[in-house]
Image 1 (cartoon, rainbow, N blue to C red):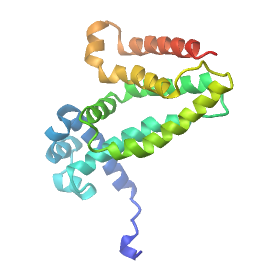
Image 2 (image 1 turned 180 degrees about the vertical axis):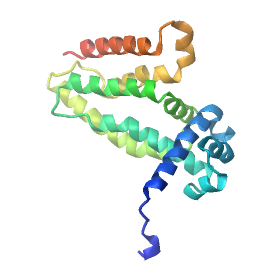
Image 3 (image 1 turned 30 degrees about the horizontal axis):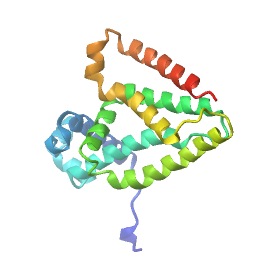
Image 4 (image 1 turned 30 degrees about the vertical axis):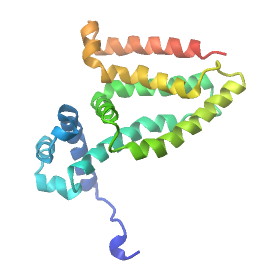
Length: 207
């Protein structure tokens, strides 16, 4: 490896600008989709010139990939932290609660990810089939061990994770439908969602 091949460490300003671009891109991609979004729109939303944005990211797809990678990182960290030595029901509820709070705090990220999946995951399919699959399978083994040791009800570990994902991400991905069906404030809505999901999970998973 030559000196020029060694990646340079980003400065604090560079890291801040990249984060600024990614945040702006989240809004633009969520509003317009990947095809409808432009680098000019992202630059305008970030309050930067197009040339400055392209200094950090070579093309629109690179920005889109960075947004999705950040979203996946936030989502997967809590799953990666599932502790095999902890109380199974407490560990699974802690994970579900983090997912629910992410839907409240970062709804645009959830909807952007859902749109990517609905399009057939053209950008992140390799990640789904490799890194995500490996992580999920390893956590399914932990859940199955809890079941085998009589610590959890005999459910399908993979479908349990599907249930947690669908029941938490629903509040971000289907917010127009939810808003049409409830008069609750956002805080009241998520407080009731938390109580309901906790009841279903903690009682339903008892052996």
